[in-house]
Length: 289
View 1 (tube, rainbow, N blue to C red):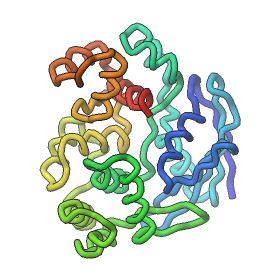
View 2 (tube, helix red, strand yellow):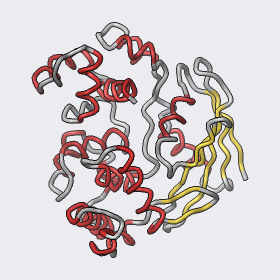
View 3 (cartoon, rainbow, N blue to C red):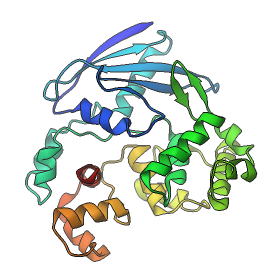
View 4 (cartoon, helix red, strand yellow):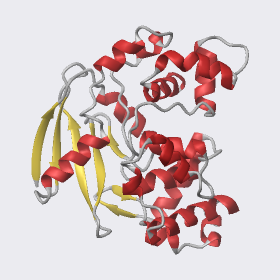
């Protein structure tokens, strides 16, 4: 076992991070203990469990990270930092939004960071499963999928590997209440990643537009899923999935509109939110959760 302590720049509200993570029953969150156990995926298909625990405050954030062992410690530490976006200070972003019409929700949710899903492949699978479902059933369906085909270690669930997903059948997923098309999409993604046709590590170094172009070539991935991958898989800071119903409802509520905003209205409203559109999206979602 190895333990490291980390201090980062505030504001950073880890309790809000845990609240959001706790929405997904697959996440091993202990809100009272202010901790979460993170699945760390290894190249050989195995994995380790890393615990992240808050010790500080929103203004003076501090964490302890407990690793299973000290092998590749720097690499694992960097991955945790990337997942929780510790290297991305929120001060300038927060100051920017205090000068915009989103000021009320940024004051209310100050220090809420963008955090990444724990694995890129899992991010795409989860996004496809969540397509056109209410949040409760989306989490239920994802839970069924992962607990049946993934694996568990120390109370932490790991998504199945692309190789395993590629070998599933539509009939198997239909038994979990997947639709025919959704089952085909999930299996198809597994096949493309396992064969090397889709290289997720390569996407991580490409511009947003190229990633969207590459992903939307794939059956079952539209702009919403591609943007979700960029935001929650790669942590890109300037994405605004304006077709998202939650964002539309949040804007309607915040600005007391009689109807949901049109695409043109969304473009006009969001013009002053650059270059932090991803944070606008996150805080709008939080405002109606």
